[in-house]
Image 1 (tube, rainbow, N blue to C red):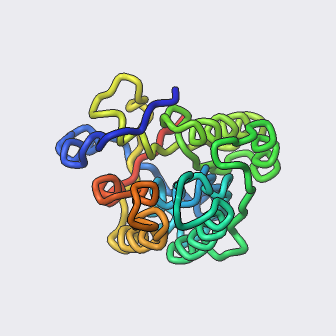
Image 2 (image 1 turned 90 degrees about the vertical axis):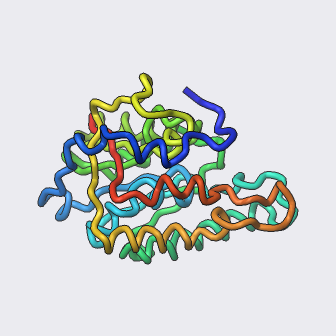
Length: 245
């Protein structure tokens, strides 16, 4: 269900006071996850870092990253950059950010779908060629509220069913519109990824590499930061969250 991402959303203090995550099972980083590189699928540049940057860092960069769109619509009325310029900027930021997590450029694929116009059928086929039985496919939750996030999640789910891969979904914008114990969130499927200090530090540096998103592009409201501090606070936790099938 697409949901409006408006106002300040649920503040991190509210999430931090919620006791439930302490009782969630911890995601096991077993030998298969370390020897068969997981496929991390990001709808836009930065989703992979916001959602599971710490997990990527703890796997020592042993992942493959697929970025579906170039995020060129993040500032549709920008007075500073054209959409083409933003696409180039965000691709470069992805390479820098993922490098800070240990991912080499050769392990990053940019598919170039239109931002806001993901072709689910084509994406499903593309992911199917990359997956195999038991391989982790880590992507945005199908109920995250953003249309691209949900489309990518649906395509990944179909590709996993086709191939026998294991789907792990992570929320990004759910932390904004939902609240603790929200009935539309599958908390019973939640798993906690406890981050090491080094992984948290690497994730923080990787998020900062997306300067086009965490800083204003210019002085006008159309060029405001997409990820201001109150949003970034949700991704500075000592753990990350994924939903298992």
